[in-house]
Amino acid sequence: MGIADVVGNISSTTTGLSEKAKNISEIGNLKRKIQYEEERIVEIYADIGKSLYENRNQTPEDFAPLCDDIDVRKRRIKKMRLEMNELRGIKLCETCGTEVDERYLYCGVCGSKLPSSRDVAVTGESADEFFTPAGATVIE
View 1 (cartoon, one colour):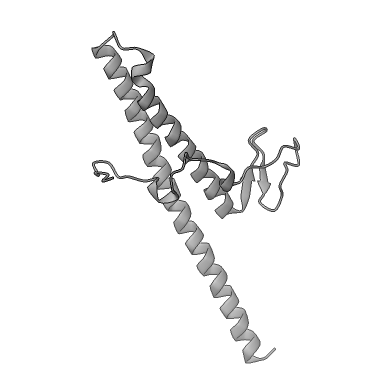
View 2 (cartoon, rainbow, N blue to C red; view 1 turned 30 degrees about the vertical axis):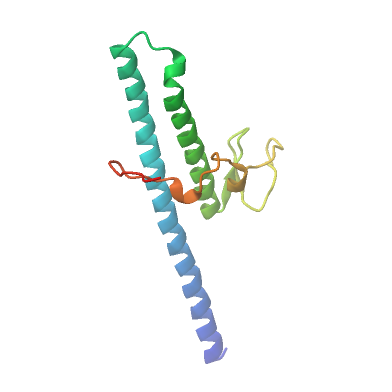
């Protein structure tokens, strides 16, 4: 084994470690975004409850925009969890909950087709629109 081989091994090890560090960082970012979306869903539920308590004459249709917002946020969370699992190298079977290596298309336990983050629609929003910090103003 020559010096060139040793340098090549060190270089490939460094590249692998760099990629793992990048994945860990991305997973941390996704976790923060998921936490934000979950907190916002709780706030929306509270807004619905408070609004209904203060004005009992409201109809379910009055809450449709808030309910739609919750649905969109839940889809965002699902997509981000799929992305997180892909970074970890696993897929989660939606039918039986089994963790499966990312190389497989079907679950080895129940046979269901495994999801991919590309399969989850978020109603035309781009991935960059997921996270809006509390108190931020969105300009359209």
